[in-house]
Length: 447
Image 1 (cartoon, rainbow, N blue to C red):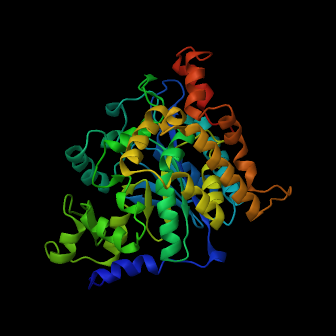
Image 2: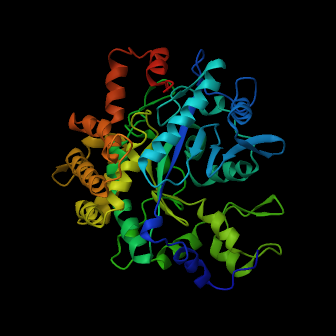
């Protein structure tokens, strides 16, 4: 906990995080929305059918180690994997960094099997959706976690939908490694440029509070109304000379939430990290641990920590979940495919990027950039990812490569659809606007 001496230490934090190619892995984070089957309302944290009951059962029955705060179970750990909670009780598997998507999928399948066996006897279901489809904000219990007592009031000051983001939304996220600054910036720039395409391909949150909400990815739109200082696209990512120093300067100016001292949260909400670094706060001075924590509270579409996080996708039905890490691995872990991904998006102006970014939330694949439908670019991106995975040639026990995880979503794209399009069709057709039918259609089934 030694104080930071100069800004060079902050840049070195990123430089020292590089890994040789043979040590690159893919980590996946899967958030899931749980509801009570009979009421179709969000499961609470507390109570006999609540999130804490589920976590305690997982710990007892499947060898997860509980992690508590003030006597409440807030997370579970097993090996290099964790189960954590979002503020509205969304249950997230932070998977072990894996060499292949085969490994990731096996881990995810085991997690779903364990989770559903516990949930089934509680009459709880988990939905393959990117947003809570029925419960309004007041109906969703806050997680009793100290950090949210600082974050929640601050979010009301800086945006209009921060609480929606915290309590109603769910994502699937891919985490990747980089070798050095040059490699990191190529991936950062490309992934940031591809964000609207990833949003459109994985759009899956068109129904909230019991009705269509006018967006294919309402989750994506909610982020634009959360906190402009820490969310969205970052313009410097598209500079030809973008570097770790640029990201450091950005992060220094983002207001903090808190630091942790002796296990207690110290409220620094609204204080830019730069001011804390220069002047301290009530006898506390900035440490690398504070910097590491601060980086986790930035929410751009692509986030850099000791690895890189791609954050633009809605949570998915289980058959589409592995497509996100597969697509990212295919594009960003092959140098030719990385360049091809950048070539798709490199020619756009900042204003065009921003217009497409917002349009992708509302229209998904039907959005347009210049004369191109986003659908056409999405198909190209899928083909680039397919080629990248084919080249990497990582086979499972059936001699299948990782393209098998792209195929269900690739087939949907060939029909001109994203998951939200499929869901809207079902909602207007065979589901007949019936929430109970939506729940049965969207619920995870035991693998």
